[in-house]
Length: 334
Image (cartoon, rainbow, N blue to C red; front, side, top):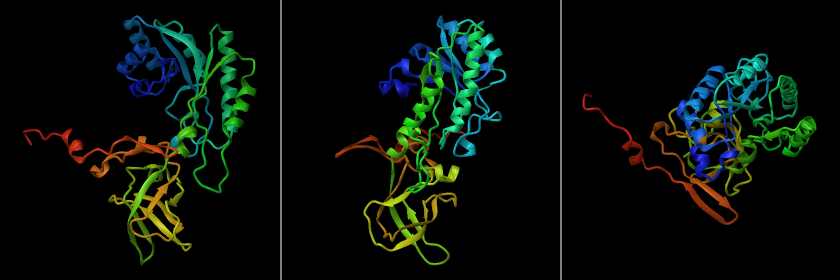
């Protein structure tokens, strides 16, 4: 929330999702005057009511509905199935809405869903929307003034050249417009990967090339802590040389320097023959790249550089190891 506000996002365009909102976070969002809270459980609803009442404020809410629709590019990023931790079971939603409108400090304004990430077809969205719209009809018949529909995000991008392309945003928009025509709902979207994914790369230097034996290893100065998606999800990222080299193609295991076999970006990946000191880019690292990075093995976070045409600026500096260690202390009793 603080990051969004400091970036100049107006509070009226901010929604607050997440299964574990703290009371301090709720207070901050209420003070800011955000668009709505996407409430994910009855205990959270009770906490928000208590906080809003104590502050003398009213919290605009949507319930995040779990429509039990499978979607997403990996089991770890599927969020709309019944067994997932997210949202309220659609079969219980009507009763929870009825309870919500009795609570002090709560104003029911809408419905919310988010069924997964890296979704490569429209059909899961369509199934989920159909279920949510049935609920909206029922809620309105029961006297709820449902006026917003937060559809979440999830539209995928292409990570591997030559593979089937996910639906274009225009196709998604046409489907949504067709489904919601005449329903008088304010539509909220939460696009993330679709905006930033293909816009970012991870730049790395070839530290060493280890040849002979069963494999050729291309050892980079970037590691799994800089881009964890391959280790975490088995995710593919196209890898390209910054400067095209030899026409000869070599199959490499592209790895980082961290002391884990899982520190591997790709296995048997065919690249132009590389040399020590060459620069390569791991493509499509603009989403869930920097934000998932860490300081494993006391490796400083890599700098972030914003580029537009022939202009560039460092927007996140590389931390110094001294600064990283300054936050750590050794107690006297050790």
